[in-house]
Length: 227
Image (cartoon, rainbow, N blue to C red; front, side, top):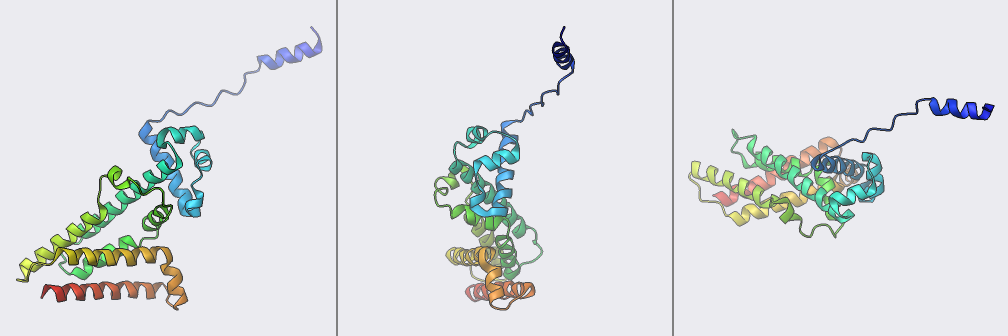
């Protein structure tokens, strides 16, 4: 046997590196990991970060695997919107239910405003909705009418307060408009609030004072309507 043959034989006999074990995941777990990676890129880079190839690399899967679970980039965006809607809904309802000892409408509005203006969920949801193409069919898939549920929770609180204090029943449309005003202001703060505050010379404490002022303004409006 030649020296070359001996070297080849020796090499062939050496145990090679064992092949990497394939991680088996359930479809639900795979979807969760993909959405987690997509959310992380969205938080760091905005909508431009939602490139399927990059997300697949983050998770350690192939690009076709993402298409298998979400069909397209738009499908992934719709799933992210549904998830953000559900997270926002849960946070809002928890905030409204978490202060049952207080019957002050300003407290309730303050909770709603604080959750909606969160720079995480609210900002991600705003970015996703601004992609334009992904909103169609989202509400049916999520199964939740977030704004409707929040309005209903606020209306129930207002009606309970009115009954306890002998006031007239509050108008539901007024509750709806109040919630919409709070939501629009809060989402605006989540997106550009810090920049606007800095331009106006407000620091973090100033933003907190604005939230208190805004909640008081809405609370005064609700009090006027209740008389």
